[in-house]
Amino acid sequence: MTDNSRLRIAIQKSGRLCEGSMDLLKAIGVKLSIRDRLLIAHATNLPIDLLRVRDDDIPGLVMDGVVDLGFIGENELEEKMLERQALGKQHQFQTLERMEFGGCRLSIAVPNEFDYQGAQSLAGKKVATTYPYLLERYFKEQNINAKAVMLNGSVEVAPRAGLADAICDLVSTGATLEANGLEEKEVIFRSKAVLIQRAGDMPDAKQKLIDKLLTRINGVMQAKE
Ligand code: PRP
Ligand code: ZN
Ligand code: MG
Image (cartoon, helix red, strand yellow):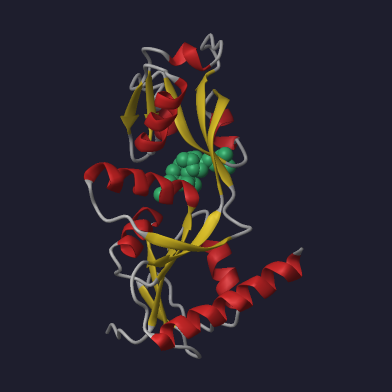
């Protein structure tokens, strides 16, 4: 069912980037016959296939050259880049465009009752996060001797569960922090969605199509200014 001559674009199947990515594709004239829960959706008017996957998988799919393009949050992209760097794995890609959607920040938050006097208060503490590489880079830069504890989900309940003293997680409205008795203290990374392209040779026809899509994306973004 996969045809190499078609441009493959990875997008998040559900979550903060999903709606923005789908809206943009629609705005630039990519017509889809998307049926729910389908991993691959074929465009009906252009040689494009959409792969709807978990956002965490998108940087790797692009860096391994499995897909041609991907819409991904800079937070996830930077984390995977650091991880691959550390593991000595291929981590090349090209950023084509920074989008106006998917905005969020990666922040350190502590329980309301935590006596927080600045980042050094984290010394000797455990901080739960899904982004250990970004967090550890921050600790290093700030010269803080703290420990990142990796959790793939439910990060916000880690302090209450006694798994960590603080958390480092994505914040957009702040509702999740508030609902869990946590206070945002340090913003360590600001993120938006970006469109990335795999490294390496691109067949002419595909590159032309990418250029055409980019021109349209720029048109849509300018119209919104
Ligand atoms: C992030 C984060 C919080 C929530 C914060 O989760 O982990 O749960 O968003 O948003 P808020 O400040 O608007 O409340 P995400 O939606 O990325 O899903 P995930 O935790 O399942 O990855
Ligand atoms: Zn995710
Ligand atoms: Mg969450």
